[in-house]
Image 1 (cartoon, one colour):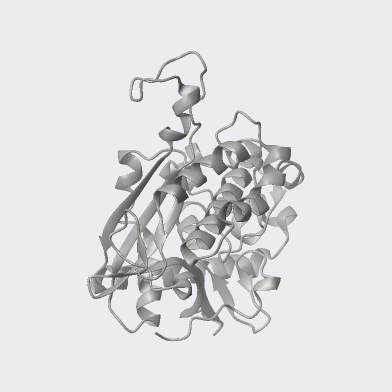
Image 2 (cartoon, one colour):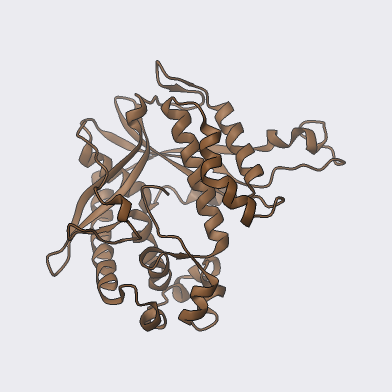
Amino acid sequence: MRQLGLVSEVSEWSGIGMGSDGKFRVDSSALKSGYKCTTAATLRYIWGLVSKSERANLLAGTALHKALEVHLGGGAGALEAFDEVYKTWASQNVAADDKLSWQNTRLITQKWIEAHHITYETGVVQGWPFTIRGPEHIEIGFELPLTTAEDGTEILLLGRLDVLGDYQGGYVVVDHKSTGFINQQWFDQWPMDCSIDAYVWAARQLLDKPVLGAFINGVQFSKLPSDTTRKCKDHGTKYSECGPMHAKWELAGLYERNEAMLAGWKADADQMAQGLYKIYSLVGNDIDSYLDQLQQEGKFTGECRWCEYKKAVCEIGRRAGVARAQLEFAPWNPLEH
């Protein structure tokens, strides 16, 4: 396996943008957002602005990743790692009865860890069809040349592989995903998802064995039942007693990718990466001059229905001062999220 190195300027990362080496960096999330809506992509990935509700989703997901990294990598203190990321912020910003409260998300994470015992000598994880060779195959950062802008600037794809599993003579990428619901709609998004394309493409550039595809490790952050009077039909006891037993997760996949599929993704990724570079070069940090000038493709694709910026930004006329007051500054770092 080739050396997988993190970028040297991670510490100065503040959204997608130009590194001190003169190279422009993007990640899969920014590319995906760019195809949905220029306004949303610029707010999130160039200007680093998020709503408080989305900040809770992001931080809870980051905390889950940290806990699973410790657990699968062989160290003790997985739940302490979860607390370090999320406890203080959530205790101050999320209601105790919310599904994203620290108590609720921590308990779900705890139940996942208990159900996925790992035998470190063999790399076998309970319930998973692949093995993990060792800590070096957990949370692997990468940067790879993606394309070149019209002015000659090199554009790199930056990201992180959550897990590399050994499976049927090759590798598989495993991506951890926290979600509010695991249902058929959740499963249906993965066969054609561009993040799988990106991670499989990246892994194939770096590894010395075939990369067969990807699995999605989905963890549902929904409110665990805690009613002290109602009885659960499934467990025959009060919900306050069986609540943790309702924690839900699924391993989805294998989602395979052939060379033709990855070639199509690469062409689309190159085009969007160059588009984001043009936007970044134009707007910089100048939200006051450009916020109301950006395209709103979400109006045509239906993405506005679910967008975190719908009420805080777009429905009130995309006024920069109001947007800054409504949103929080939380620069995107693909090596953390």
